[in-house]
Length: 231
Ligand code: DC
Image 1 (cartoon, rainbow, N blue to C red):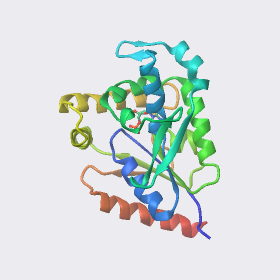
Image 2: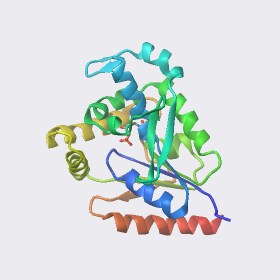
Image 3: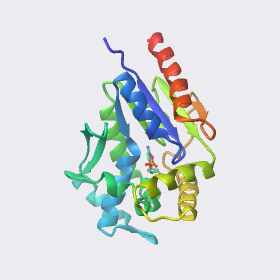
């Protein structure tokens, strides 16, 4: 029988968490959940409804609308991963734009938003066999995860990767804006009151500033194999 463990991957923005999480999930036949996509989808909804903008946040209005929002992941066979749907609409492209990245940390600070999403994330991981990446997975969502990883890399390296990704997709962005966004999100995500980004005591730190995908993948597979033998 395929043994199932829970793997929590946390870390700063654009540290390649989702790339590595997808590869691990594929290899071990686990479910991959991109928790950041859920915060992004709620932010997209808030932006569409004028509840959040560069200089404002209509917190009470957003909170009262939360219950009317349904989020789901739908697996796209061609892409090989699950895309984010908000109220039945595929929002995968929209939620990756810099405009959403620039507002998401503000929305992710709201405790009511966190409570809703953490509950849904815990339900998705109930049966084990899940790889979830985010900011509070090893500390709040799955404090008893079998394996916890904490990814880091220099801000410059991360912004370079993110900039390339956005440019390759055809988005018109400047490197300066991307770097500013990466640093600003780190700051807000790490200093917010509710569930700040911190390394769980039992997490293994991986600095991938000078590490390729294959090297990270092999290193993490060794850790997963070791865990699977233990259980
Ligand atoms: O992983 P990402 O960069 O797509 O996440 C977008 C934002 O969502 C991130 O800047 C902070 C927030 N987030 C969070 O607060 N908690 C999570 N578990 C995942 C993301």
